[in-house]
Image (cartoon, rainbow, N blue to C red; front, side, top):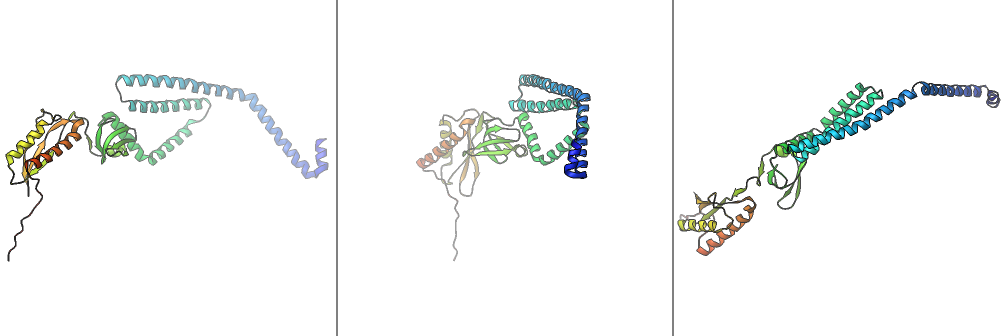
Length: 295
C-alpha cells in the first residue's frame, strides 16, 4: 500500500528511491540487531574491565608514589628532586595503566606506540634547548653549587638566589632586579658563591705619596684595621707594601671578616682610612708627570 501511494505521487523514479532508502534502513537495523545480539555484551565487559584497570591502576600509582617519596625523604634528597621524581614516576606509571586499559579494549598498540615514539622525537628536537636546561637543572639540584639565599655570580649575573627550578633559576641582583637565568647557561659558566665560606678577605689597595713617612702610614693602617670591631684576629690581617707605582707607594690592606659583614666593613674601612689620611696630612697622590722644557 505504501509503495503504491509513493508511486502514484512521484512516478517510477520516486518508487525506486524510496525502495532503496527503505532497504538501506532495513540493513542498518539488521546490523544493529546483530551487533546488540553478538558484540554488545563483549564490548560492555571490555569497557568495564578497562575502567576497572584505570581505577585500580590510579590507586596503585598513588601508593607507589607515596612510598617512593618517603624513601627519598629518608635519604635527605632535595625537595625539588623529590617533586620532579614524583611527576616523572606518575607520568610513566599512568601511561602504562592507560596502555593496559586500551589493550583490554582490543586496541592495537603497535601503531600507537610508533606514533608516540615519532611524536616524542619531534617534540624532543623542538625542545632541545629546554631539555639541556632541564638536564642542567637536575645537575644543580644534585651537585648543589649554591642554595636559595646564597649570594652568587653565575652566567654573568650577580645577586641572591631566589628560586631554583628545573629549567631556570631566579636571581635578585644587588640593585633589586629579578633575573631569570636558564640553567644551561649557569652550568656552562664559572659559578662564584660568596656565601659558602663563613669568612671572606677584603682586598684594599691604598696609595700614599713618595714624600710621606712610609712607616707612619703603615702604622696608621694597622691601627685602623685592628681597632675595627668586626675585623677578625684569625686569620691575621695583612698590611704591607705591594708595589712602587708611577706616582704612589701602594699598600695591600687585607683584613678578614665574617661573610655577612663583608660589604659593611669594606665601606667603613675605606672611609676611615681617607679621614685618617686627611687628619695626618698623608697624600693620596694623583698621577703626575714631570715636563722639561728645553730652549
